[in-house]
Length: 82
Image (cartoon, rainbow, N blue to C red):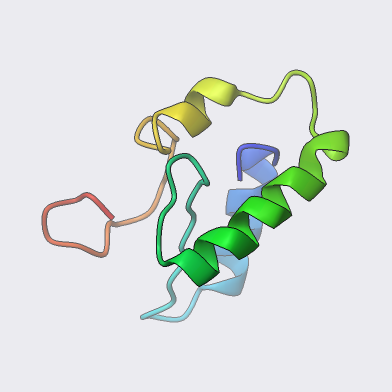
């Protein structure tokens, strides 16, 4: 999501998830670990995207695990961490 124009992206999300109960999930790949099989697929995917990355990509948003990503939606988890 850090590659997107967030204003445009979020307006489309709001349009598509306008019914109650709609959910959007975003995540980043910093320190992602699920299982050896999934981790291998993620690593291969990330390696394959290197030639297409934008040089001005906001890498700080990625490094902090999207904790500072503007997100205009209600959290799913009670503690507000998701």
